[in-house]
Image 1 (cartoon, rainbow, N blue to C red):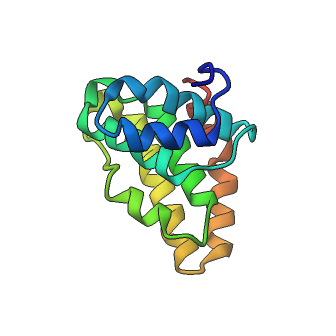
Image 2 (cartoon, one colour):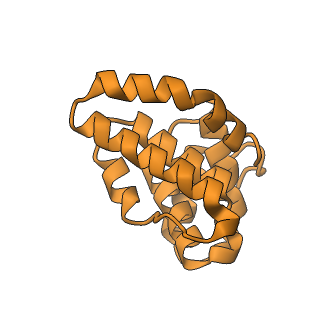
Image 3 (cartoon, rainbow, N blue to C red):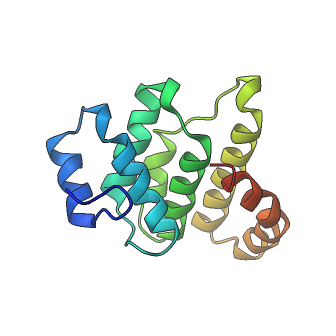
Length: 141
């Protein structure tokens, strides 16, 4: 397998198949997610779904900025149904410690609803308003 700083799509998708229930692959999945955000690697729904499942199964390893990045990448992969699938895995957390994360996640889910219903004018208006504060949230990773 490639170093965590440069993992290939083939490597990460192989991990998702061979080590589906092995939480030790989380760092590799997170590294690939960050590569995808930086446009250094193509988006992988399988890797994104696997990472979000681990976050769901093991809340102590939840990385809120990475979870938000994963949701934004899947939203950008429109018109696939990937975003809708992931909304069933990632659920807002009512913990006060994760309040900012929950607010950002709810915003991203609202954007997904606007895009899926074709309300692009409202989406772009809301996206423009939230873009700066969302960027700050994602940079906290």
